[in-house]
Image 1 (cartoon, rainbow, N blue to C red):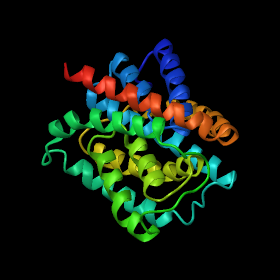
Image 2 (cartoon, helix red, strand yellow; image 1 turned 180 degrees about the vertical axis):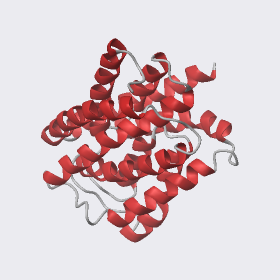
Image 3 (tube, helix red, strand yellow; image 1 turned 135 degrees about the horizontal axis):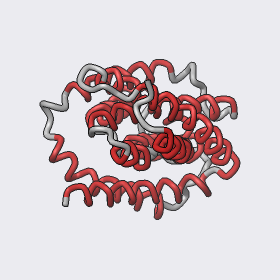
Image 4 (cartoon, rainbow, N blue to C red; image 1 turned 90 degrees about the vertical axis):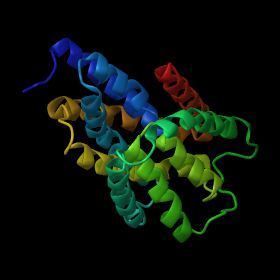
Length: 252
């Protein structure tokens, strides 16, 4: 049975479409969907878990779209994706152990730093640069770190994946964006699995929002592949700064 009224559902579907578009380009779609879910009457845990349900569709669609465009080999990412899935579950299970309040205080500073990096760093475009970590070391370190954070808290995980791929793996902006999507999908799935034990997502609403996410992600991924860094960089900077501002607002 549908958890919300028809008019509220229309609002949530619109939010899902816009979030899917933003997520496919730069990440940060949860900035839109989580507040709208809260406004729709979901509890904080329901909003977070339902956001993971619908976010799976957007991340999966974007991953397939970038793969069809030749920007990522999803088969080659299978191992890192499994690692991201497991690390995300571990991160979610550590919520009661790790000092999440301290992490929340530092997070806005990190996000502003990411925004400054992408806004001011010269030479950042769609061409690859020299890598600083080997693929094996990158997979063993940065993938589980970002995924564990996604399970632990979640906001800005896409930005952290992007920063890692650009600054340490040496990927160009478009290639880095493409490579974040399957990992985002996997860490979303792991977090959702963990959430399912402590929360009751709005499954039907989340699935319907997921359909809107598919449409938004297809549109965003297509535009990102056409525009490349010219579109991705400014949107990434904007979403990082906006998320930092929202986190600071939530602390007041």
